[in-house]
Image (tube, rainbow, N blue to C red; front, side, top):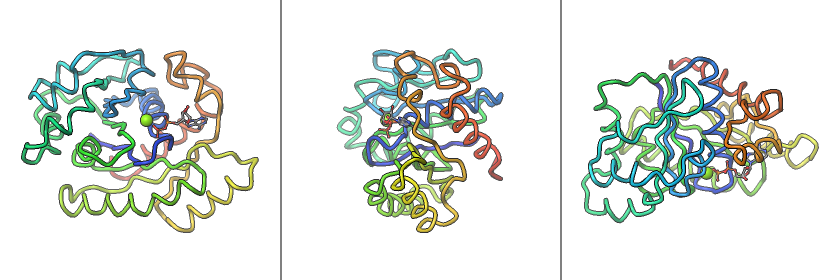
Length: 253
Ligand SMILES: Nc1ncnc2c1ncn2[C@@H]1O[C@H](COP(=O)(O)OP(=O)(O)O)[C@@H](O)[C@H]1O
Ligand SMILES: [Mg+2]
């Protein structure tokens, strides 16, 4: 079971788009996938049609609830999901006095008797608070989507430092699966320059796959379908299939 946290403290980086659609393309490739939505804004949950699922994940994290009760089936045969709960924004406060709170989710997953998944993907909120720490403690790999815009590169060094600190202090096995360039528009010089800069500055860490700007990806959530079920032949589907192949090809399996 490979566990990937999809992390970037900057909102609008492409985390949710990547979590939702990489989960779908891995499932399409016959991998069993569990997608966990750790963002109180619940965008990934809404994308798969889960609305206001009560306490759900909040109960698991803050009230010692059973994780089995929070797992839902999705429209894709091989994809299950733990939807977010709006209450998740209160987790920080609820766990303020808890020792080693960040390992709760990791322990709950480890404690499951039945773990049929090849991949666990975790969509994180746009902050590096307790919820993202839960993800970084649980994961063995981090996937970092970045918007192909020069402003988006500024926070990246800081993020990699934070990931390194988590590795030293909480999770020695944590590796970077890759930095993923998202919303790349090959028609603009700026987008190409950012891609070149990214590959030079973070040599060896940037995914070969690139996610192009594709309006179909922005439309898909309104239709409550991952991109491959919304428009199987569009660039967004091709790019996330390419990413799935790249991730599956990594030696760690
Ligand atoms: N490759 C893409 N092409 C077009 N729009 C995209 C693409 N990736 C993301 N978006 C849009 O950009 C916005 C932010 O993406 P999202 O995945 O929600 O980022 P995050 O989860 O990091 O905040 C959304 O409106 C989404 O539809
Ligand atoms: Mg998001």
